[in-house]
Every structure is written in C-alpha cells, then in structure tokens.
Amino acid sequence: MNNTRRHPEIVLPEADLQREIRARTRRDFLIGGLAAAAGFGAYEWITNARQVDGVPWPQRRILDFNGRLARGYLRDSHLMPTYTADRVQYLKPNGNDGLDADFDVSQWRLHVAAAESAPDLELRLSDIKALPRVEMITRFCCIEGWSVITSWAGARFSDFTEKYFPPGQSLPPYVYMATPDEGYYVGLDMKSAFHPQTLLAYEHNGKPLEPEHGAPLRLVIPVKYGIKNIKRIGTIQYTTKRPADYWAEEGYDWFAGL
Amino acid sequence: MLKIKLKHLLAVRWFHWINFPLLFLMIWSGLLIYWAFPVYHIGPLHFFPKTVFNALHVPFRLAEGMALHFFFMWLFVINGILYIGYTLISGEWRLLVPRSWSAFRDAWEVILHDLHLRSQLPHQEKYNAAQQIAYTGIVLMGIASVLTGFAIYKPVQLNWLTALMGGYPMARLIHFVLTLGYVVFFIVHVVQVALAGWNNFRSMVTGWELISENE
Image (cartoon, rainbow over all chains, first blue to last red; front, side):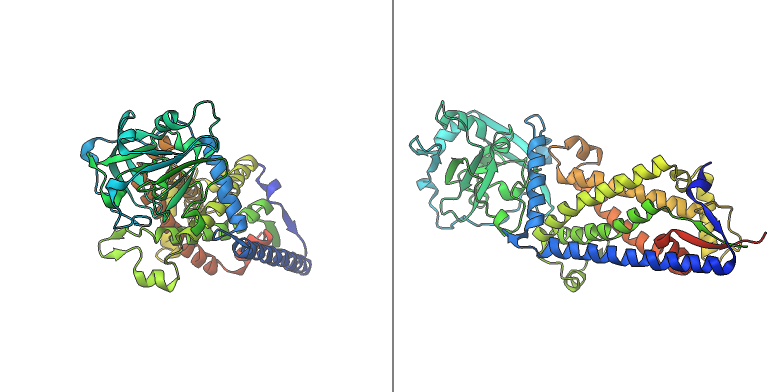
C-alpha cells in the first residue's frame, strides 16, 4: 500500500517538531486567509457588478451561456412526457398582465409581421383552426416550482409558420409575441418555437380557452417555463434580433428552457 | 515519541474548503428558489414557517436565487468531479470508502462511544467507520443532488433522467430532502470537529497532524 508515501511522517526532536509545525501553521493559515479573502472578493464582484436587466452581468453572462448550451442540446425528438386524460389537474390562473378585463374577444385579430418585404397579415381564429389540430396532455411547469398536468388543443407553431411565413424567405432565428395591449410579451428562439409540442392553443380541457387562460389564443410551449406561455396573443413578429421579454427584463433567464 | 504526519493531502484540502462556500451558496440560492413554492411539511412542521423566511430576508428573490444557483452549480459540479477523480486516481478512496458491511456495525459502536455510552472504539485506520460512511455518503448525496437538480432543470431535454429520478415533482422533493441532509451533516460535522480539537482542525488546513506515540 502506498499510503505512507502519500502520507509521510516527519520525526524530529520535540523542539524542532514544534517549530516545524508552527511555521507550517502560520504559512497555511495565511494562505487560507488570503484565499478566503479572494473568494469573498470574487463573490462581491459577482453579486454587485453592473446589472443587465436586473441581474449582475457576470451572472447574466452565465444565464445566457446556459441558454445557448440548452438550445444546442434541444431536439424535436426530446419531448415533454404526455399523460392520459384522467391525470389532468386544475390549472390555477397565474398572472393577468396583458389581459385587459374589458377586452372584446369578438374584435380579436392576430397580427403577423413576417418579414420587412412582406405585408403584415391579420388573421382570425378560424384561420388558426383551419390548421391541423393537435391535442396534447402535458405537464405545465411554472418557474415558481409548481407544475400541473394540463390538456390543450391547437395548431403547431411550425404548421402556422409554414402556412403564413412568406415562401422563399429565410426564417429568422427569433420570434416575438405580445398581447394586444403589449402588456405582456415574450421572446423565443426559433428552435424552441418549432418544437413539435409548441402550440398556438385555442382549447383548454376540451373547451374554448377561458379569458383568464388567454382567450381566444395562447401559446403552449412545454419546452419552456410557464412565463413563456403567453396568453391572448395579439402580435406575432419574426425577427433577426433577440426580442424583448417581460420576465427576462425582471431578472429572469431569457431562454427559460426546460 | 512525537512526530508529525501528513493527514490530509493538499488537493483534498483545497477541494474541501472550496466546496464549503459553494455548497453554502447552493443551499442559500436554493432557499431563495424554494420560497416561491414552499409546500413541503411533515404534519404541522412546515418547511419553512413564514417567520423563518422573513427573518432570513428570503421572500421575493426567486430570480436572484435562480441566477445564483445556475451560476455556482458549474463550480460546485466541477469541484465535485475533480475531488472524486482525484480520490479515485490517488487511491485515497481506499481510506474513505467502507470496506465491508461490518462498517455499519462499527459505525454504530463509534456513535455509542461518541455519546459516552461505550468506552472502546473499534479498530480504525485514517477514518473510523462512522466517518467512512458519512464522508462516502455525502459524496453520494452530492451526486444525487446534481442528478435530481438536472432532472428538474431540464425535464424535457433530459426527460429520461427526470423519469429515472421518479418524475418531476418527486425529483424536486428528493433535491429538497438532500439539502436538509447537508444541513444536518454540517451541524454534526462542526460539532465533531469542535470536539476533536485544534490538532485535528489544523490538519485540515495545513495537512499535518501532531502525533505522540508510545514506542
């Protein structure tokens, strides 16, 4: 066993031994103290550096790095598990930013800004319902930590884009969605938006979407936390620049992927 | 005869003292995150009462907690991998890992001894059986924390891992219980270090321990 080679012993007269260990103690506690001070200084810097959207920039850098890493690993074949209808749970309406109580659903139109060169579109719910219908029972994960199994029906965002994004144009890397009053808005990377479980949903639990869940049309995107599942979409804009995001401006991760 | 012996290797001392603030920061930022959905309780015993959260200034710091947690997780994981790798390659694991099932019986005798219910300690090398179980267990807990952590961090991209950890809500519960385990470990560890005295504590900083032996 090489135990004694790794754990050597020093045998000296007692006075020399005491001097030896005192010298080692002085030196190593000094090094330890300096290391602790350096660690503390690093922590102060990491937590007090200039803020970018409510997060000190070194932490924002790492959040964005984590996001790029996660986007790189994201695959259409990596799916949120699906459940049977008897597992569906109550979904608590959580947050009503952008949900104006006086909103008249019958006047709702979806504005689509696809490209500079193409005219903006104005769509009705029937246009969305004309797309292939997808029913899905998945777990809805709130960034707060709770999650419930929810049932949705809607059209895949990828099908929507295939139909309404002008042919021949190259698809930009981001999409921005906002409520009609722009009180709530999300930015998404196109890879997550094109995930097969990303729906423009118009039904919840087999019934038309309730006002508190974003009637008449909301985003359901299981590869993201609930904060990205924007209710009552008024505008969809394809864009080359990373779009603004309501909660990312409040100190949360922009990518917010699951 | 008096001698000094190198008890803790330099690398292991660095891994230990780097891990200490990192684990503390993971627990603290984890608490900031947990506050947003603090549902766990055993009967009337809630984790944690509002007064505890308020006293620690935890409420409404979810975003801050997530940014810290997903920053320091990398350092925690890297330090942990380096420690385990070093321990395996150097052969130090032989001193740490219990060698047989009798370690559990020996550990029980160590506990009785430490509680002053028994005068004799079982034979030991660098670490006694209770220490071997605790120091091996804490590494396994660390691995489990990382696995359950990633299971709740990426339940879609790593859905196989989430399923392996018992599903999303179960993985979160395990992640939380492990954290309580660290707090218990820390308390026992600090008490034991305090009881063991200066020579022992100094060896975790300098590496060297003063030993007097009867020839």
